[in-house]
Image (cartoon, rainbow, N blue to C red; front, side):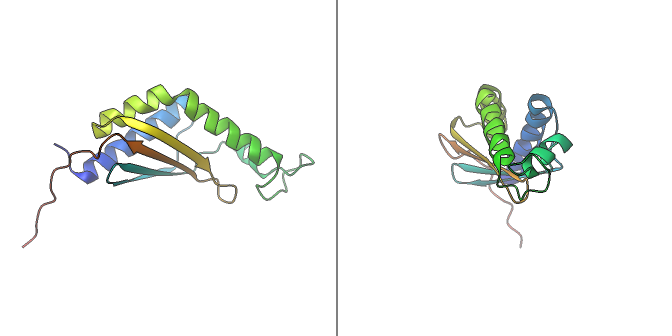
Length: 135
């Protein structure tokens, strides 16, 4: 049986692998937090140079926007669609890491920072080994 920290680390490894294999680029960092049956995954450094330019493009196609223009919306739609299309693979990775089935997956990417967030609701809270008590 895994500890909560071991489950969170396994989720980080699995999501980084999914990003690398499915999206074509791995994140700079991944952090996962398990709270009851909710899994919060925060990724940084996920955008390629071309995606970053698209994300920052304003309505006239120049790269001097603030991440709130058409390019940012297209990137959000593309990333969310890729997560949706890869849902079966992501579900399997989450199940392997947590031992629980994913009920729903929510995804967003920040216009301000390019950070990506994935929230997974699990069918049940994973069974974790109790933490060691310090004397």
